[in-house]
Image (cartoon, rainbow, N blue to C red; front, side, top):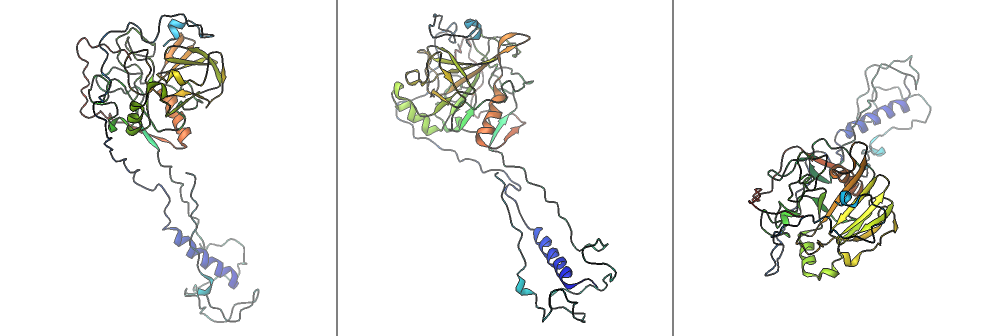
Length: 390
């Protein structure tokens, strides 16, 4: 006969496994709630920056000999869940009543045990406790670990806003281990020309709709100046990725502040390296086979100087809109120049490198959006004769 202890363990195990059928794990089904649209209180007389009216031959190069340029090659070419543990409910021991049954003795000679569970009709008396039997006393339930909930969403690489140019759809991660260039604030990769307040679509740069996912690649976006990349299908392109930072309220805070005092969101080094150049509105970090170029920080509040060694995550400065006197929005323009075997020092798409870096910073995956998501009400037609300098 199967001893009572073994039988009770089987019964209790059966009850516990049945209870496991109703366990739910975080992340089952559905998607994160949408962030409600916020209509920021805009100050009177504070429209977005006007579009440039005069062509700038090459706004990414001041044409001056910069004494702080220490190591960059060919400046004209380079310028540019946690797991949640859920305990299975246990069966209280006081629901089983057995009178005077001592541990290790044979069960009482009766067909009924006051357990609330009917005694099995047949038990193999030749089977010793602890040996394999054909009776499925317990069942192993394989509960798959749910996928973690995505922390942001992004469009596929090279999928630019319609009418803004053609992107590089065959991208690779050119800088796989970089730190995200914004220290902590939420960020939104998108065009600064073809969204609200960018000059083409009209509106205001602090529009709340500018601070929403999904992200959008804008490497290879149309530009007027003759800046190119072998990774773009056409010439005269945007050589980096624009990054909008913070919230619509933050945007208005920066707008109200004096230009020299704008220090709201920290910009950091993406890799260990050296400050190889400090220009009029740009800072370069040289790291091995890459040069990382940061543009439009508050140049009055830089935390680094040319020739200085920096480590990944070290603060370089703050997001602003410095552009040598040319109007632009509050954002960080970020470039990766890579020493490639085929084309030498060339601008390469930074989009997927930034996606992976943001996933690491936020400790969660991004959700790839397959369909195009156009910006509502933004006419993506470049006016005839319009000069795009950013």
